[in-house]
Amino acid sequence: MPDRNDHLTLNVNLQAFGQRPAAWQFSGASPTALVEPAHWITSAHAAERGLLDAVFFADQPVLHNPNPRPGNPLEPITLASLITAATEHVGVIASASTTYNNPVELAERLLSADAISGGRLGWNVVTTYNKAVSANFGLSEAPDRQERYRRAGEFVHAVKAVWAAAAADGQYIHNGEFFQFEGTTTVEPSAQGSPVIFQAGGSEQGRDLAARHAEGVFTVELTLPRAIENYTDLKRRAAAAGRHRSLPRITPGLSLVIGSTVAEARARFDEFESKVPDSYALRSLGNVIAHDATTLALDEPIPAEILDKPWDPDAHPTSTGYRLTFLDWIQERRHQSIREILRDFGGYGSRIIIGTPEQIADDMELWFRSFAADGFNLMIDQFPDGLQTFADQVVPLLQRKGIHKREYGAATLREGIGAGRARGLVG
Image (cartoon, rainbow, N blue to C red; front, side):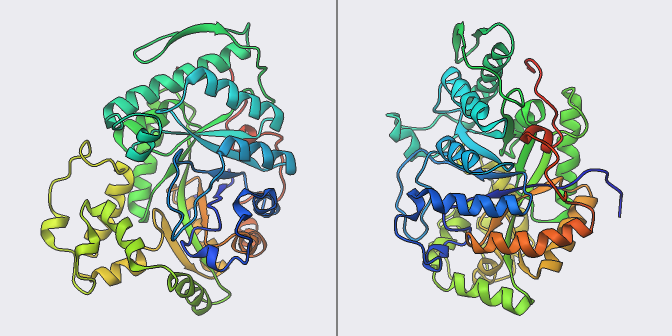
């Protein structure tokens, strides 16, 4: 395999009780666990035991029905401060939308949390297309994709202007299409300068945003050849934007169900899935094929007229990168029944491995050494035990392969992922 002189960048997505929709039914946790500090701190300690770089929090700033899968009820930056106060090394990446925030206020809020963490905060830059979120902010509909990304690019530039001012004389000014402001910030830069920027969009606009600004990127990849192609494309775009060749760090989502044998892992997966109604997976599948999958026959293939119909990304709000990646995967299985597709669709937004620690470590090494990924954003089936199993059984194998660190050698998240200290404003 090709040689690399770096280590994996490993983050874990702390998704409520776990990535499996029915994880809450097996956790044994109290009904109020998701608003109790111990629930989050226990998983953060497991991540730190595994020498992971960061824990990650997604966010949808809207109330939702928690059945059949509870979501995170707490605001991510608040959770970040809780976790960094209770840990010593692991970073925290908090999502915050550029569609429904103010750049000056968010810049100071993020930098404040980063400063008190000792330089362990990351910001996951997202745009928001959920109509329910729009209504939560008093709007009848979400901005279209083009507007969201124009606003996002300007938003990030404006945030970085405030951060650059914090490291200089405090004076900032910005005049753009969406924002016009000037003022003085009294927030001091953190130990790493400013928060690390992550980005998760896979559309053309999202890739360009990541190439210009992000130190890390969350991607959706299902096959090794496509992952290598997309990895090369994003690194090329970043180089064209004047970035260092090591940036951004590309971390595809990886869903894991771990067992001491394949049969044990499969039984664990099947037990989780047995508690989830078919409608849950069908709704997720429907978002990919842009059709109500609950109306289709489970034991028949997806009709060709659905798979082959033209798709207008501006008319369908689902993430473009997610949709295209999964659609390619489904096209390769177009002769399978929907029931068969759903069984392997279990990543719900990421590639899934149901197997032994050795299989998982070998797969991660293959993707890393093939330059398909710089690391992974882990989706663990259930917290905290699934993450503890990863730390105790998979991490030692990765260390023996020489692709995962044996100790935390950096004081900040930025240094830990090889991004260096932030200096000044990068447009």
